Length: 355
Ligand SMILES: Nc1ncnc2c1ncn2[C@@H]1O[C@H](COP(=O)(O)OP(=O)(O)OP(=O)(O)O)[C@@H](O)[C@H]1O
Ligand SMILES: [Mg+2]
Image 1 (spheres, helix red, strand yellow):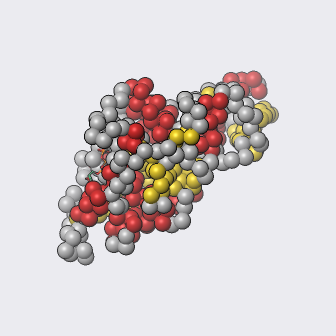
Image 2: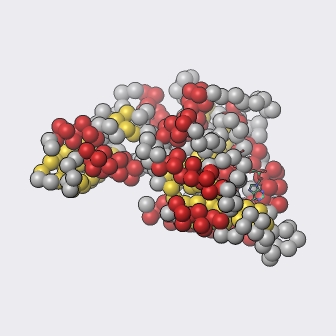
Image 3: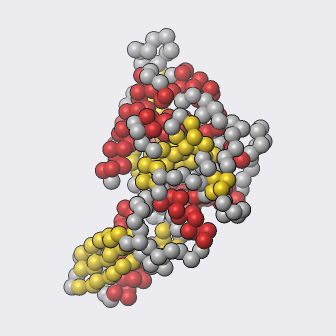
């Protein structure tokens, strides 16, 4: 085993937040030392936090373990260093935007209609209520719902900078910075995006936005779990994900698809936990009653099955839907279901900081 070999192995590790360039090309490998039975790699990161730091450290370790002789000890160290300015100005611009974000977290589901957007929007509001600086990118380029759910339809984000390299200023409301492809479409016009166009629109929603310093950027992921979707997911520079499900037994297969999307070797990001939406039904007039329409403990069973924590349970209540339709997320209030979102936000923060 030589240092050159180790360089070759780790040059397969790409940085999804930097146009998929490999970490060797990006100049992030500070040092490789091979001694008897041990490899030590030092990765250099810029002064601002890289939301993919943990992911890259894990990916480097995995690349070496995969190819080194069995029993080799692997250590990956990190140092902070002002990275040299990338030469490509477009890349530079994009990077600056996500580099100022502490944690980029995807909100995903195995199938549509389980309340992914409802959870994402309310989670964003709840995190903001807890005092965090929060943004939400509506990456559902096929059916954006953030403008409706926040009553910001018809709002148009301003652009800053020269054409072709402009940055969009997110819409601020309820203490959260929102961005959605819906803001760029004439009202009522259906958006049809296919393949590469959907992919670049999606990246723009995240990278071409002046998020400013943020603690959390949530991404309402587009629905689907096919191959195209997996490659999209791999392209989004996110640290990890939260998966939303409903409690039915039949949802297990969908959750599995969602989980595999992130555990897929080409994506390989941690799943911070599962959110069980519509966990039980509570009638508006009888807030103390709980009816388990889709069975009890479905979420807990699924979480255990996949070895991920159950971060929260959200009831099925009429007010959650009405609030979504009216654009005033329930997480702004003090009802029991509002508090469920605040609790979910706290659990998410704890799970992210534990990783
Ligand atoms: N806990 C809940 N209680 C009541 N209604 C809910 C709840 N969660 C979601 N809904 C309603 O269900 C509908 C679907 O929710 P939402 O749009 O959030 O799902 P989605 O998973 O994002 O769907 P899509 O796959 O289309 O993006 C909405 O009308 C929403 O208001
Ligand atoms: Mg949605």
